[in-house]
Picture 1 (cartoon, rainbow, N blue to C red):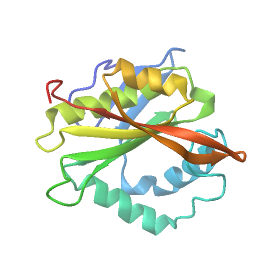
Picture 2 (cartoon, one colour):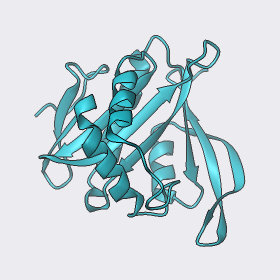
Picture 3 (tube, rainbow, N blue to C red):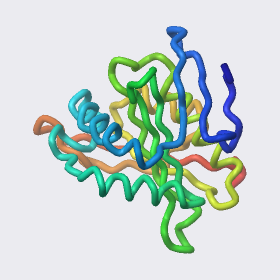
Picture 4 (cartoon, rainbow, N blue to C red):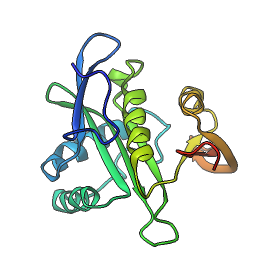
Length: 193
């Protein structure tokens, strides 16, 4: 098993052993994955309140998702990776930079792992692959994210990878009728930026 992805993901994929020893394939998404991606998102939206959507709020047609996945693959400042345990889609990271010249260098990502696979190192490997890709990019110089201020495990992961807090959005979300703060964090391939 290739335990260390190349900065550009070589041929677009690599396999690693997760913390349980299971082989996990990480690869670039392809348009044919549209149905699996939609099912994955609908499933994971109901697994945690750390998501920005509530169950049932994601409603995209398969053909629309196929077009989006094809569009992402053709952009130098976008990357969508999926993690597979056998034939089951169990994780994803989706980064997209700005569409304009002034914002093409920066963008945000979303990282999701099925609850059944939490704590197995899959989110870390997806994030590491994104950061390796960004380091080798001729375009991307800043990666941003927003995370619930009470999602301490995610914040610890991001800080361990060099993300810094850039701000706090007070009462940005309402979860179970209670306001929840969100942190804005950023990572720079050049730590001197």
